[in-house]
Amino acid sequence: MLNQRQLRQTGLITAVLPAAAALEPPRPSPRGQPSATSQGPRTTPEMAPFGCWGLPATLLALLCCPGAGEAFEIYIRPETLLVEPEEYREINCSTNCDQPERGGLETSLNKTLLAQGPQWKSYLVSNISQNMVLHCYFSCSGNLQHEVLNITVYKPPKQVTLKLQPSWVAVGKPFTMECTVPAVEPLESLTLSLLRGNETLHTQTFGRENPAPQEAIATFNSTAHREDKHYNFSCLAKLDLESRGGSVFSSISDPQMLKVYEPMQDSQMPVIIAAVSVLLFLFVASILLCFAFSQRWRQRRTGTYGVHASWVRLQRAFRAQPA
Image 1 (cartoon, rainbow, N blue to C red):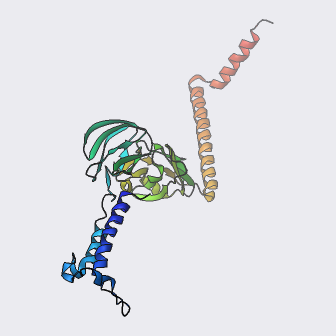
Image 2 (image 1 turned 135 degrees about the horizontal axis):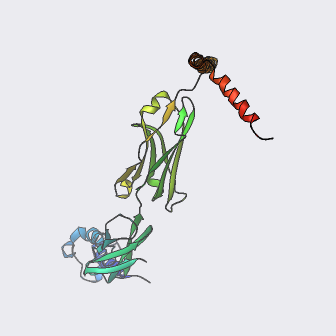
Image 3 (image 1 turned 180 degrees about the vertical axis):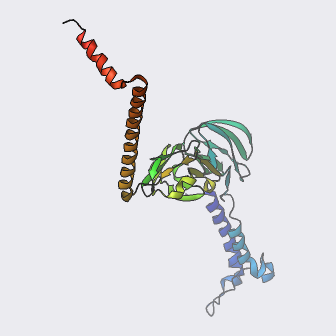
């Protein structure tokens, strides 16, 4: 079956054909037979509706003015939508159709009609908890069209934790930096940068394998240097939503210090052992000398050595005990 547009075009073509036939010059008839045009009044060129331009003008009007079945447009504002979980937003649906038959917003979310006009409707959408697509639709002259709005739910990095393992390391020995950021979404827009002072040691991004909110972890193995003890180590988390119509959310961890010490050389060990042995010998010798001098001083005062007197008293006490 033909639609209204095709019917109007068909009628317009039907109207064009007689005009084209009127402009067509008479065909020569066989000798002796009157031509078909000679039987009636002949139309002069001045009598044609558009003269010699009648057919082209009519076809041009047919192509440029198709009539009632022409397409219309639907607009949705905002064009992109970024929200945190459980937030609400106002959405406006409109059309350039002069007299739309019906229209509205199709969604599984909670929606409230705030206001409306002949060509627009405004809704309040709430309880947005996950990524989804909304549809604005209008019907004009029996033609139904719709426009989509993609909603992106994001969770910015609010807590960034950095661990240095081990925190006490010798020069030239390995250590590990581990950065943790819980519950970030969308994960593919997150970038973690491990820093030593203002220098970036490692950068890690994430794919779309697990779109649900989860813990993001970045690790980096490095070797300790003498100058590392003079720098702060930190982790910078960036959630870049500019490509989705948003902004960049950043958060940085508390600074961590790496304790670096110089390892002992093997050639120094004998020297250290010898020095400790000498110090121990001197310490024992000083105790013995102090003991000897104290006994000598006692012998001069009392005539006996303190050790000998103590030994005699101990023997007498042992003998005095009953059998």
